[in-house]
Length: 225
Image (cartoon, rainbow, N blue to C red; front, side, top):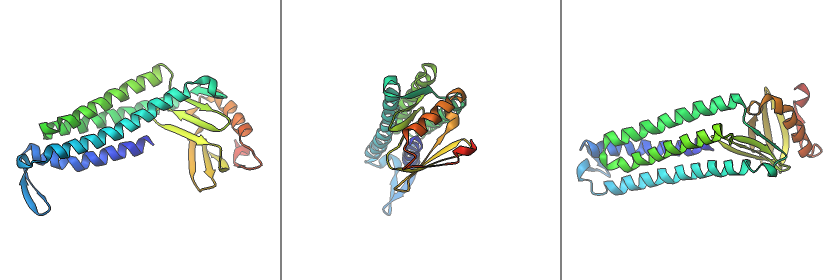
């Protein structure tokens, strides 16, 4: 889900950057067959405002989802199983969050360089960077990035928020440490067993089989593990 939010932020930014370049350098650009000098375009604040507003709303939704997920998965008494993410998963989270922060910094910097009129968009990316840094530190240092299981679902929260519900399942299969959950509506969700610390994986798998009715859901590949 985090990837979807970031993709839309990137798309909107990519569509706005040429306009910021034209406005900032007073380049002539065409729109609906008209030639307009960047600094003479009277709707530039509206364009930057709409773009910045969309980027902020998408980023706010993304941030709200992550912080809400952290709050839920840390209510330990609600879960039959709950553990911090594995060291292997922590390394991937740090790497991906680092790449994300650098990406936000570069996009914000380019907007600032291209046009001072787009400084509000740059400030939005500064907010995203601070939020990501705080979320990462909180999640890793305070051990808030966790994976839990109830009788109805698996909930995994770190840079991503993933909820895998047991209702509607028709098949659970495992291949090379990857769990696949197939639903009656043809939806398929995956979950990496390596995200769980090795010493808790057997407990997780046993509980999964206890929570899912094997008379209704077909298990495949578990005998080989």
